[in-house]
Length: 276
Image 1 (spheres, helix red, strand yellow):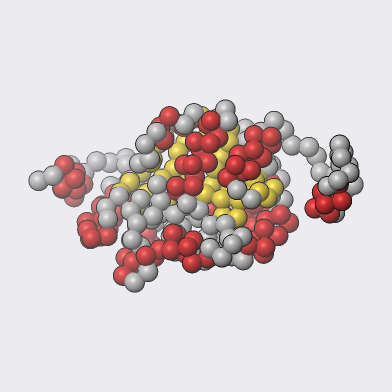
Image 2: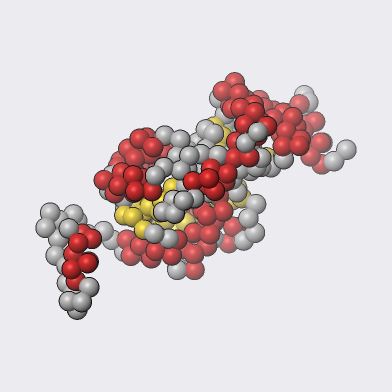
């Protein structure tokens, strides 16, 4: 009997632990019955939240759609809140919480910046870039397929936090409820800056759909909606980090007639047209 089998047996036995708050599984879909059983048993042991890191669900199409529906049925039946599937996890360094399989994730320092990304891999990449720029992480979440917990949920959680909060970096790769995401950004930007990177400037819809199983909104439409909600828009991960570094120092109040100072007239008309 493997250690995993012994743990599973313990969860189903009379000495099942109580007071469990969180469960994490990375069981691949060739052993999906084991993974589903582990998720249900964790909920039965008292877990209120769970993380499924494994892939091969809706993002894979075919049988993966059925596998994800099976997980959704467990979530509905038990009431457990689930992050994933198909994600590398989440981090809250200030709370000493590292729910990630990415090497080095535990070395990311605590701080005030939050990262909410459609991809767990992108979330970790941004968090490492932030650390290299001298910024620490308050909360970082890779949404993955977003079966239950979505980016809008995480943004609303941040908006409701009572303590100090720094800028939020938002990576939008796939959206299941665009209106709710935009409304969550609007609520959050009333409190802190939100910097958004939207995937899809080139025709990457099929690629993103195969990655997270969610539809990628038209690039211009998504950017326009997020900008109207108050987000700062950037074009790549490096720009995102640079913007967060600047906004971490403070945010200037909005002005109806902003001024622009230029040291050259050569590109002045272009820059003015961008803000005009």
